[in-house]
Length: 282
Image 1: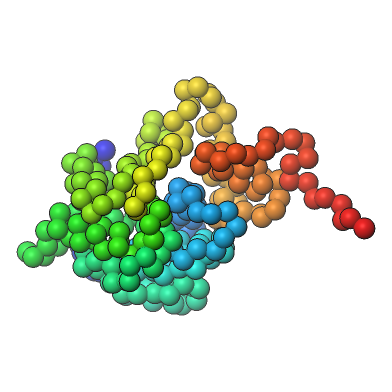
Image 2: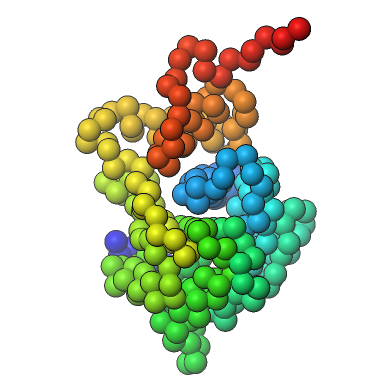
């Protein structure tokens, strides 16, 4: 799990590392936008939100608002928190639909109890494991964050964090502090046997224990090649359309039904009529 390359959180504190030059990449680099959109979609999928119902969500480490764009496309309302003013300036320039707030995760979430229906965070949580100042204690900062987040979530909701853990000790530190704060849940690992596609998602339940979702690619040994083909095809589709899918088309309908199946919901079987437009009734 340990990487040989220098990690961003070892280079400088987040408010220093994500300067104007770095922030511009998140609005101009198509590859970054593509990856961020894919991970945001997966995080929202793991939230298991009510079908067809707009929700009020928190995006921790929202950066330039790429995750928020996906939330808005799905019909949700959101508030974004980030420590980097340069990243938030990019979000303002992009005219994102969510409300933005400058804040340090380690200082806690300044919201009233039960404010949000869920929380997502993309590539931000691992920064709390670093002590950038003498006064910083990673366990205390993690506990402060998780305990205030737990309070700000409605009971029965979820929080999903995509993260890049440095090692197993860091994972244990994060999950221990989350459980201390009252959360249930655990780690969901997508494509665990792939060095490139492997992704870690910390899926937390607030107030109500639930069944931990299954990671993508864990059935590869049973399903064989089709699972890998489906994944690579999905990546190509996202790349060609810059992170956006054609809604209401057959591919979009089939993909949505597959997400519902992974969430354990009852879904009708696919047929040759799936995704076809019905003729209007007179």
